[in-house]
Length: 401
Image (cartoon, rainbow, N blue to C red):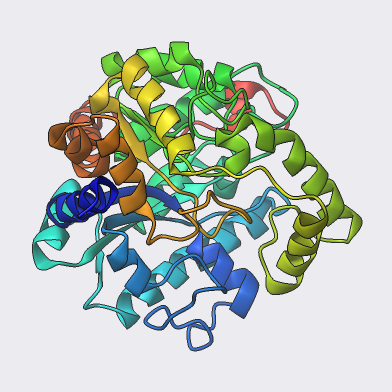
């Protein structure tokens, strides 16, 4: 047996004991865009290779033991439309859980994650991507939590009324006063504050305000690939004091410097053909692939992602890192990590670099479970000290009613 084969076998054996908690998968939105939420037309119990990055067989092959399903809402939707879209996303996750109970287990707590693991099922949690989905309402935030949402990404790609996005012009230079209150209320109910997609100033403001660990559900290291979606070293270095985790993502333009400019060209081509750059429907992907044939893209690999994890471990420590692939939310992925079955290849690369079994068990399972448990403990303490916030954006930010 070759060293490579032996390391891959060791990676799979480790994942059988310490399965992967993945921080971000956009399957719910992909189901909306491709089949209008008709689960008969995209049965994840079957083989959806070539259509979606995710199905049950490949989740099992990848050693996934817990998944945060993104209940994403694009910034093109606002107000009550954004709230409704988020509810529809929550609904389809519930329907998946009802349809596949032998494989997917609903999970609201760290204990639920542990129980699902013991049952051999994939713990299924939800994360709302884009703070505009609460429509500036803390009551809506609380309602989402009651429906099972366990993290909220404060922004997506656009700056919102109370927080700046990493990929848009700043309006607040961090969090507004209402944005800080959103963080406090998330702490009080036990919803993790997700700092992927936000500006570096928002990251720093949130770390200053929060009373619970934060997460980056799908972000890599800015020092390795200088993209605003990644985490600066000073923020990574602050995670040990906070207790949070940064979950490295696989999106090539976030992990491979050479892919940044190529992606700009590919996205401009998509726009020129009338598609949103993030569109992964079959017609959009035909346009993408035709462009790629004419202008080959730089290829990331598991080693590219491992470079980020090496750096993140060095700066933040092994107790404060994880993985969030962003499957079904991106058009392109590294070679070898094309779908959710690829995680063992990444772990085999890390084993080749000398990562220990203890290191990898923290990366895959233990860190994420700990963070959710600590957020639950913090919430119980905070809720005993203060009631639900009735603050409004008009009151705190002086916005007109």
